[in-house]
Each structure stands twice: as C-alpha cells, then as structure tokens.
Amino acid sequence: MSETIDDLTVSYEDGGVEVTKELDKKVLSKGAWTTILYRYQDWDNGKQCYGPDKYTIRRYQKRNNQYMQKSKFNISSKDQAQKIIDTLLEWVSE
Image (cartoon, rainbow, N blue to C red):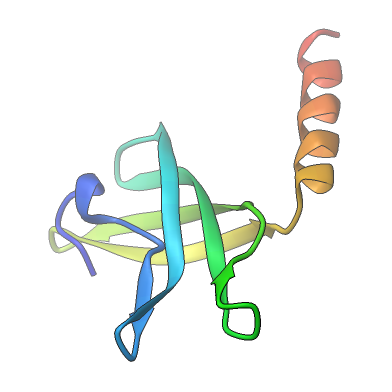
C-alpha cells in the first residue's frame, strides 16, 4: 500500500532481479478512486532480457490515507493496445 500517487508502481523485484520493470505511468484520474495507465516490461529468465512492452490499467481506492489496488486490466501486446486506441478514437469522434 502507498500513501501517495507518486509511490504507486507496478515495478516488482524478486531475488534481486527486477522481474517487472515500470517504464512509464500516466495518471488518468485522481481522487478517492485513482486510475493509472502503466507501461512496463517483464523479465524473461530464459533469454536473460526484458520482453516486449506491455500495458496495464490499475484502479486504486484511497482509504485511511492508503491507496489499495481494487482492479486491473492488462493489455498484453502493442496490437491489442492499437485496437483499443483505434476503437476509442472512433467512438470519441462520433
């Protein structure tokens, strides 16, 4: 749990290896419910390198001055991300 939006991250370390590396984050909404879009990479132990970019949208609820993750949606590829972008652009331009 985190006290501020700046402290929220998807970075994760296990055994001294950063297995999930956060590349960027954009706060989409703030308040009692906060939504953040993250760009990240997962460590591929077999190849000993990070894999392709992935994206996730996380929703946090602030309670007792702590942000707690309540839901998430993972976008697993650039192709899926592009389809979401295309669809939203179509919908908002109607």
